[in-house]
Amino acid sequence: MSTQVPATKAPLEAMQRQEPRRSRSRAGRRWAKLPVHLLIALLLVVELYPLLWLVLGSFKTQQEFLNDPVWSLPGSLNFDNYIEAWTTGNIAVFVANSLMATLPSLALIIILGVAAGFALEVMVWKGRNGVLLIFLTGIMVPGQMILLPLFSAYFNTGLTGTLWPLIITYTATGLPLTVFMMATYFRAVPREVFEASTLDGASIIRSFISVGFPMVRNAVFTVALVQFFFIWNDLLIALTFANNSDLSTIQVGLLNFTGQFGAVQYGPLFAAICINVFGTLAIYLFLNQRVMKGLAAGSVKG
Amino acid sequence: MQSVLGDKKALAILLGPALLVYTLVMLVPIIWSMGYTFFSGNAISGFTFVGTDNLTRLFTDPEVRTALSFTIRYAVVITVGQILMGYLLSLMYVFILKKSSNVIRTLVFFPVVLPTVAVALLFQKMFEIAPQNGLVNSLLNGVGVESVDWFGSASSAFWVIVLMDIWRSMGFYAVLLYAGLVDIPEDMLESARLDGATGWRLIKNIVLPLSLPVLLSSIIFSINGTLKVFDSIVALTNGGPGSSTTPLTLYMFRTSFTFGDYGYGSSIALLLTLLCLIVTIFIFRSSRRDLTKD
Image 1 (cartoon, rainbow over the protein chains, first blue to last red):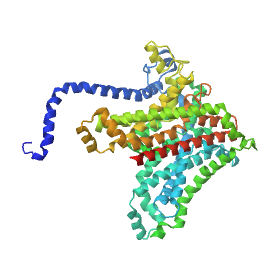
Image 2: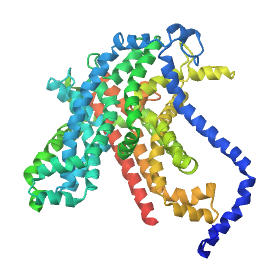
Image 3: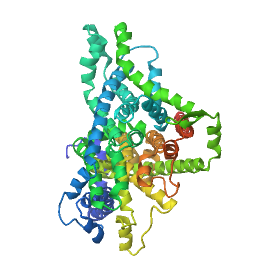
Image 4: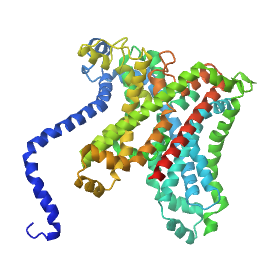
């Protein structure tokens, strides 16, 4: 400190000037922090208590629901409610349907969307901005605008009664955002990379498969996560094309669950909601930073 | 080089499939749906041509007026609510929690990824009155207030929806706006502080103007999303009591699938699409003008 050159004297003086004021208010500062701590505590209670209440409820018996106060703890950790929801409540079937609709759609979205994003961003051709704009409008158009013609088309081609309408519709509605996001990610890859691989004699398709795709691998995974959440949580399309109990996805199934016996059978309903939440919770637990980044990047979807 | 990067055959292989699926399953149906507006009937019973009856009915139907007014009211209230809450949270992350905000940010974001149906059923049980008091009414009873039938009146049902959707989405907008706030150069804030700007004045004069672009794009995303609200309302109130919380999306769905009128359903969908389009263009225009003025 004693060897300070004159140039840094001014900040030093400023520090010294502040010093007495700081020490005087040290105890006061702890009190000043109190509202902040209270605020954060309140925020956490508001965000997390409903979820905690849900999980506790899933272990309660019907007697506990009817006789104990709502904030009481369950008497024991029994999984009867889960077993009842999983088997009698058909949640097992709904989860299987959701998986069978979601995974093929995701695979198709990624294969088609990444290739299209590459073609629109890396390749050089007339009219690519126009095509990108056409894809972009798809993000804005509400699902209601395509439901009825698709319903007629699936009905006339005999696809109604299978999971195909869901897979096809999810793939198409997922493409605009995927193409848009992938084009953005490809923009960040230096042009020279593709020029070099072209000079080495690779065709453009070869460049895409062995250079382009591996370079955006991380981005592809992020986009897949984002699309997974959109498809898994979708209600509108599932309600339109899979509204019978054999085909119901988890969201439609859960919605009808309340109608069936959820209004009086609290325990199984809470357990069913929990099962629905656990899937996304598990993913979020391990990949939260990536999920947050991905969803923020996909926010154009609103 | 250019011939390789512009190879027509490769272009067809890479772009073709996506463009084909997108055209067949989205673009063609959009045009087809506009065609439906001139017909009545449905896929199972067949169609009859009715001219512009459906479109003129849009202007006289009192249900459309209720649904439209609900949709706009919902979009405005939720947009203001989630952007305001999100902005306050992001200010808290940046200026109060600083480097240690990561855990809180992650926790508050969590409800965003939860299935809407699950959240809505949870809120239904929390605000329940019959057959049994839920969490909220029990708390009210605890402080000596009578139970409220939250889903029994239009206005209280509306506020439960608002509460739920802001609870669900504020963490998302907080992260979005946070990204804009951390981009503000630290030395700019520092020099403002040296000039004596602190607290509210620092935010009003320095932070708010600098985060205006990200605020505006958040508003566009929010309005665009809230005009299309469907899941949370179907699962929470199912449009009730009566049809007081029915947005255009749900009214379209009912008209088409409960009453089997595809023509009128398509007309309502068209109205909704135009609404989204107009709002997006309007906000884009006004935000551009503001940016060029600066």
